[in-house]
Image (cartoon, rainbow, N blue to C red; front, side, top):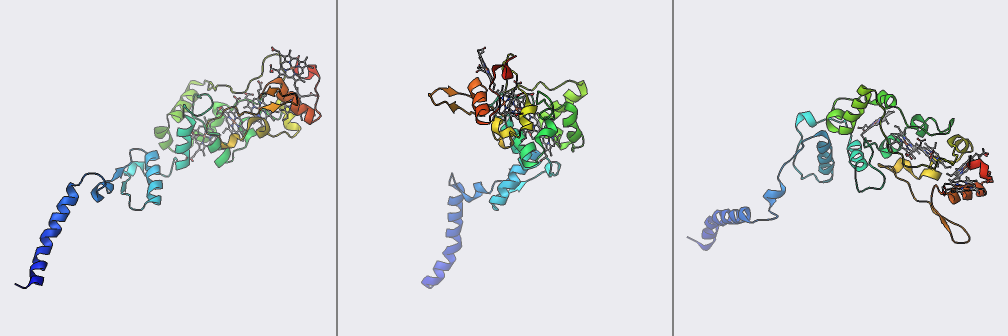
Length: 241
Ligand code: HEC
Ligand code: HEC
Ligand code: HEC
Ligand code: HEC
Ligand code: HEC
């Protein structure tokens, strides 16, 4: 047997040994990264599809019952962000996202806070208003989001949703949304970029007076400073009964 021929017959054997060594090597073996990821809900399926779009080698399996375009990836992510206990702002009875409704879907602020242009209080949307849209959504929303099941429960019980109020001035102060909205002061000037928030919180807006005193949002100095700038009334009785 010539040396070259001996080499050729030995080749399959060494390849087999090499394969065995690779298969037994722990850690980042090729076999492990090929493991298939299986979705257990529509939201998990949306996340897996997004990861697959980034990394085509990823092996994913979407069981047919979870292969739905609704809810969207954005809705799933906003929901999680809106119920993040570590994010600023109080926990709300339903993880409702402004970034999703007012930002992505561009639903007008006053569609939900319809009091702002006419009345003193901005007001909260009724359960009926939520249901106007959510009643016609596919059942996958109910199974994905506990918040949607809760919403439907409030509707069935005919009870208002106990939203936690974030901005509040004391009883002895008179604040009117309508006067401000009519004067063209934007919501964001006082409330910050609400349409970018999954979970609403009171943004800080501290005014430093010339003599170095800070006035935080909703404090008297904060109101008066803007009134001074805009030549609006600074009479005590304007804001105090
Ligand atoms: C004008 C229609 C409309 C109204 C009114 C509306 N929604 Fe929605 N809502 C949507 C749409 C559209 C989506 C997301 C669809 C998607 O991307 O999958 C959504 C998603 C959601 C979600 C999941 C994402 C998130 O924000 O956490 C929740 C929870 C929700 N809505 C609750 C409510 C509540 C509570 C109200 C009433 C205060 C309400 N919605 C009013 C249209 C509406
Ligand atoms: C689909 C309905 C909907 C739309 C559209 C909407 N909101 Fe809201 N808003 C709510 C609900 C429900 C709450 C109570 C839960 C929360 O705080 O997220 C709320 C709370 C708020 C709060 C906190 C109120 C407090 O307790 O102090 C502010 C401020 C606010 N919205 C401003 C806005 C602004 C500004 C826009 C437009 C950019 C807007 N909202 C659009 C439904 C809506
Ligand atoms: C000049 C500042 C200012 C502007 C502009 C403003 N707000 Fe407010 N907002 C406040 C203050 C102050 C409070 C607390 C009022 C109270 O305690 O009665 C408040 C409270 C709220 C609340 C919760 C209280 C309620 O009435 O249920 C909502 C919702 C709200 N604002 C939405 C809006 C929206 C939407 C806009 C724009 C259309 C807007 N605000 C514009 C200052 C402002
Ligand atoms: C971002 C600026 C701004 C801030 C902040 C602000 N205001 Fe005003 N406010 C105005 C403007 C501008 C007007 C004038 C509207 C007009 O001329 O009709 C006004 C008008 C008013 C009026 C009606 C005045 C009248 O003549 O009837 C009241 C009451 C009032 N503000 C209370 C408050 C209180 C209370 C706060 C703080 C919690 C506050 N405002 C914060 C800009 C502001
Ligand atoms: C533009 C609106 C505005 C005007 C004008 C205004 N205030 Fe105030 N004032 C407030 C707000 C809002 C608060 C509550 C927040 C705080 O305590 O800083 C307040 C709080 C107060 C308090 C504290 C009450 C307490 O319980 O601690 C006093 C006292 C007061 N104001 C007196 C006055 C006097 C006197 C004037 C006239 C020179 C005046 N205010 C003009 C908005 C106003």
